[in-house]
Amino acid sequence: MRAILLITITIALGALVACKTKQATGTAAKANNTAETSTGTGAPAIVYKTKADYSKQVPVTLSADKSQIVAYPGIKDINYQGKPAYPFALADGYLLDNRGIGPNSAFLEITYADYAKLNSVPPLDELYKRILDRDPFTEIYNLGDRNRFTNEIEEINEIITKGGLKKFKKIK
Image (cartoon, rainbow, N blue to C red; front, side, top):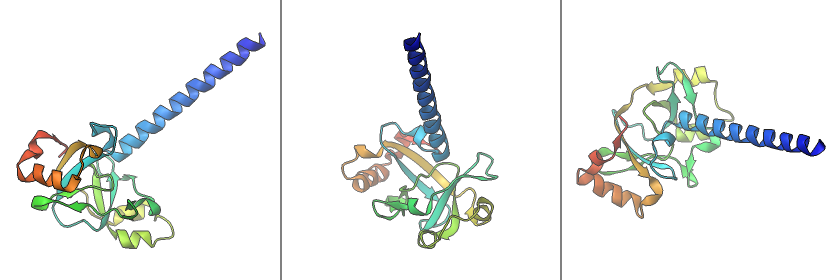
């Protein structure tokens, strides 16, 4: 009887852990807006153009109706490989994302440099008031797993200059 009780508890705990892990992964993917569109196991290579130069501005993710912020970076999360997560400039005015851009992303009037100096993230209603453009993108493409590129800037620039973006998933 004791063995059956122990087995039942072990199975229940295992199921609970599995459910929590799946739920957390789904939430992160939805908040990111890009993880679900990746075709590989690594971070997706997201290439985009904006209506204005927002390359130094901190991006946030808005709800589908763009009425509220649903995801934002922590102060220590605005770096990529030890430097501010500015997008990489590409050919023809395109940018390669380093922060987690998606179709519901928007840019704050706060720069990466100013955001990094904050002691804490401002309240969401304050951040929302500081959005520069709720619909800043003219184009967004998912080029699949970013790790598949040996020299990502050079290879993606070649894709762009040869008109190859059309072969990839257009997000916007």
